[in-house]
Length: 413
Ligand code: C2E
Ligand code: MG
Ligand code: MG
Image (cartoon, rainbow, N blue to C red; front, side, top):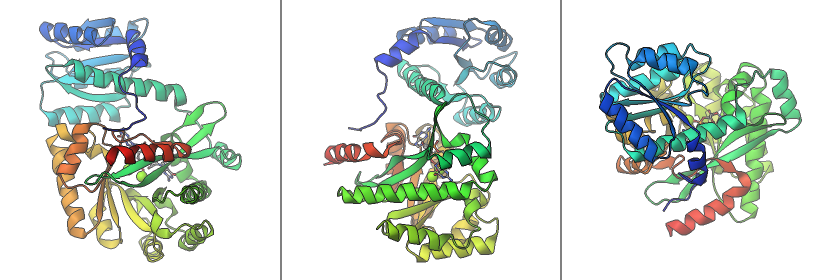
C-alpha cells in the first residue's frame, strides 16, 4: 500500500467535477456519444460536443460559462487536433486539453509536446476506447491544476527587487519529497524544493521565480538560504533520531564561484551535518559555461564528500560529455521520460538505456516524476535504483516528514 498526500478521487473532487464544463471534439458521432456517457458516469454534468475543429473553436470562444476542459481527437478530416490547438493558443481563454486518439503513441506524444510549447495546459493523452478510469485519472489531475492555480495563479510579474525583499523577510521555505530505493522500498533521502510564501499571492512554486533569480545575482544568496534551511532541517531530524540524506538543487549559474565548495563545507560542519548526507543536484544544461572553473568547483565539492547528481538528465545538450568529465554519483532521469513511460515505447527505451548507462558507470540511477503504479513498477523492472514522484508522495513541509516516514516504514515492514 502507498501513502500519499494526494487523496485521490474523493468527495471534494466529485463536488468540483459537477461544475466542470467539458467539450468533446470528435468527428465520429459514436465516439462523441460513448465519451459523453463515460463523462456522465464520472459525474460530469455539463458536456458540449463539436464534430469538427471549427465548431470547437467557436464554442471555446463564445461559451458562457467558459469551457474548462477539452477532450480533443487528433485525427479529424477538416481541421485536425494540431490545428485546433494552434488556434486555441491564440485565444485569451485557454481551456485545459486532453487528447483522445487511436493514433500511435509516438504521434500523441508529439502533439502533447507541441501544445505545451504553444502555452496550453495539457493533462496528457488518452487512447480510445475511453474508460471511466482514464477519465477519473484526468479529473484528479485537473483538480491538482485547479488547486495549484488557486494557490499561485496567474503568472505574476515579479522583479529581482521583489526576490531580494522576500529573501530579507525570510519568505522562502523548503518542501521535501522522498526518494525511494525501488528494490527495498527504503527511504533513500529527500529532495528539498523551494517555495515562496508570498504575503499576497500565497504559495508560489519555483517555476515562477527561479529563472528570474538565475538571470540576476539573486540566485547566489537564494541558494545560500536554501542550503542553510536544508542543513538546519537535516540537523533537526538528526536530533530527532532521523538520519537521512537531503538533495539540494544547485543552479549551474553558481558554478563560477570558486569559493563555493569551501563555503558549503563550512556551513555543513557548522550544522554538524556530514557532507555525505548532502546531494547537490546540478541541472545539466549549463554545467559547462566556464569549463575550467566549473570542473574545478565540482571536483572540489566531490573531494569534500558531497555527492553530485546530474539533474534532468536527457534534456540538456551534452549530457554524455558531462557524465564523462564530472564525478557524478547520481544520474537523475528527467520526468519527461518517466511520466507515462509505461504507455510509451520511446520513453521506456530511453529509461532502459539510461538505467543501463548508470549501471555500467557504477552510479545510482534516480527517476523522478512517477505518478502511477504502472510507471513505478516499470522503473523497478528496468533496474532503476531510486524512484521519486507523486505516486510515493508529493513534496511536503519539513514538519510532516517524520510522520510520513514513520508511516512509510511501517507499511514497508
Ligand atoms: P527538479 O529539481 O527537477 O525537481 C523536481 C520537480 O518535479 C519538482 O517540482 C517536483 O515537485 C516535481 N515532481 C516530483 N514528482 C512529480 C510527479 O510525480 N509528477 C509531476 N508532475 N511532478 C513531479 P517543483 O518543486 O515545482 O520544482 C521545479 C524545479 O525548480 C526543480 O526541478 C528545480 O529545477 C527548481 N528548483 C526547486 N527548488 C530549487 C532550489 O532550491 N534551487 C534551485 N536553483 N532550483 C530549484
Ligand atoms: Mg532536482
Ligand atoms: Mg529534475
